[in-house]
Length: 327
Ligand code: ACO
Image (cartoon, rainbow, N blue to C red):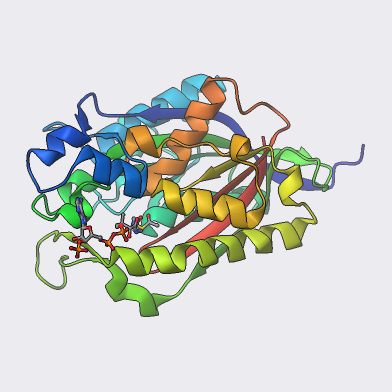
């Protein structure tokens, strides 16, 4: 076969979840809520919460090591690190450069991307542009978050929704035939609309309050926009490739809320048995949710080589995006 182009192929996955698990009942002891309310409205039963000393970069480094081991590669094989996060350890340096140092990588480039819950899709799409341009060969793409550090633990409308964790993938540039049968990222589509800032934001930052701030959200408004934005950007991915919902083997959405996931799958015509759902165990881990779900579904044998995997996310900004990946 004539080799005509480069594709970004996922070679390995890894994840790291903090050891501490907080169930809904424990939260009901802190704010006026109940396991029943949380489970019914969101599907969430429990979430992992980082311990003191556990940070976005320590979780990211552990997830990266697991992904490298899974790929059968050494840290020195990596020449690009992109970390998607909204909860960096520090205003700077980036989490990505801390991962680079943690893995003792002294070549290549590392940087963060900020697209909140859509961050992993944005980071993977960015890595894909670097790899398919020929400038870099192997990337670590990581979503890592410690949302527990920016939650207002007295606000029951937000604190019950989120969790901490990190997921990573190793992506490698490989020559391919240029068809949708190729392994790798087949297409990606990113969108944003800054007019929606006030619906989901953090009320602080270095240039305003000088503090990290707390997450604020108009949940009903986010819900109202989510399904339409998600389905639009997935339809863009189908239109760009000629692939359809029928061709999708696994739908791995951002895990914000089971009701958003179910409504999106239904609107897209994707059967429930194809949907990977982890929100019950992880809560919303923002940029980490998709790589955490990919790692779980790959390790338990659901996602296999050759499967068509659809990922999508929507989050603060608003930002939203999708990608179709042949595993
Ligand atoms: N426990 C008990 N009651 C609660 C809680 C809670 N944790 N939180 C809110 N309530 C109350 C409200 O105060 C309200 O009471 P009222 O009627 O007396 O005023 C009532 O429950 C209903 O509140 P709503 O906001 O209308 O509840 P809704 O059914 O919309 O569910 C939720 C709220 C779960 C936040 C929903 O709107 C949602 O999922 N929105 C999407 C937001 C989201 O997923 N954001 C994640 C970040 S963005 C992303 O990742 C895509």
